Length: 536
Image (tube, rainbow, N blue to C red; front, side, top):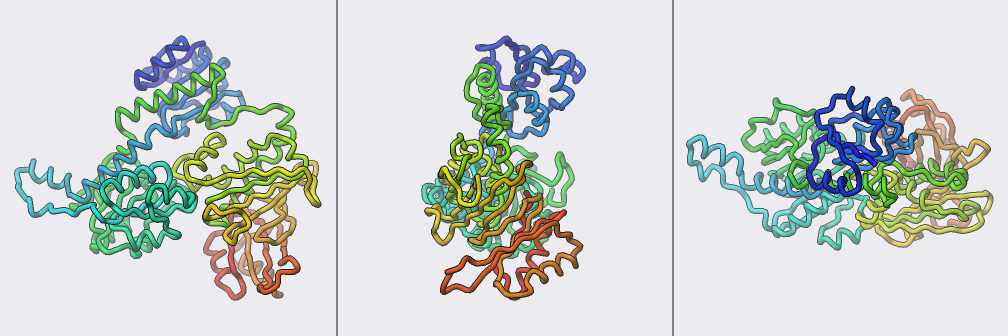
């Protein structure tokens, strides 16, 4: 078999490929050359410059494996590759150590004014007293986002004698205890405690602009801010204002709203350190990325286990006939459960009915995918979702039962925020099934209330006192904001719930997303307990 290495990677990766295949390098090939010759190869290894779009993939008749020497896969048309049965694998762990170390480098430089002192001295000035800094010892490091990189930063900061507090509701409580890190229930607890604040969040619609004027106002006076994650997490104008006012004593930035950038409102600030997106830039990370991607190509072409594939190899036709229709249901139930629970430490997935007779691990993976997507700094896919859950200390339990009351098949997803057994007061369960010949997914249970609602892309849920007029109030607010309701269903408190105020749940689908401020407007009115909008 033949493998093409289309871009420069570490020699260790090329050597590994050469042990198994006939390897050719095409570092300087044009797109036209690649299109003409790609059909000769069984595998290809790329970095970020090569764009494997649908046309190139269609021309690669022999291609069975794509290795991406790095984390992102934006330059590969994954659906087109999947359709052709081509495994696409990346190197998701190649840069985590490098990114964590760069965070610590900026942390130390920020505390001790190292870049400023260097520039002053090389300019011919001896200004020792001007650049007096602060110790890290016994200071508090606040971490927003406690995935792989955040956890590595915490371990290293603890070595400096720092107290570490972190916020990430999608990490189990036991993982915090193992690392000696205080678990914050809300971001505000991190703001209030942190002397240094570092961001390690994913970029999602919910996290863009996370560190804004309101968040900075909740921080300690004199806090120092670091961002080695994503530029859009920080509102530049708000950070500038906080630096100008003295609320923020300093900042270290490795990422920016748009890149490359050479002009920025904070460039030239005496208390701001900047680097040109060097978080993943080390010789070791580059070599590691090439070697890990080469490992995946070898596994894909020799029948081994591909551990970082971003597309799932096809399952048998028999299993797909039964399990395939349940995939979107399980993913949606996971997303709804995570959206309502807010924090996840334990996941229990129950399969009831005929579906329990099958190998349901694929469906468990898709439920985890729904739970984790948008809540981790790492890209979550069908292959790495179970390992990401394990790394975050989230326990996963799968239960099967051969029969389901009222339905041929039923799926239940229960999440608990503190890794306690389901059934505790902090657990939340959602349930669903497929109905009809077209296998339409239906939501059957939320917050202990039962109803039947066909799931659409945009879902909004409310919990409220079971009194007249509540449905009309929701409809009135939606109408005032121009939001069109597609369908709605209501579930009431089960009989026998003594000693508690009767509550009901309302599930609504709409033809467009419901903004969070509209949901907040309704929940703020009398009688409403909770509300959440989820895009599936």
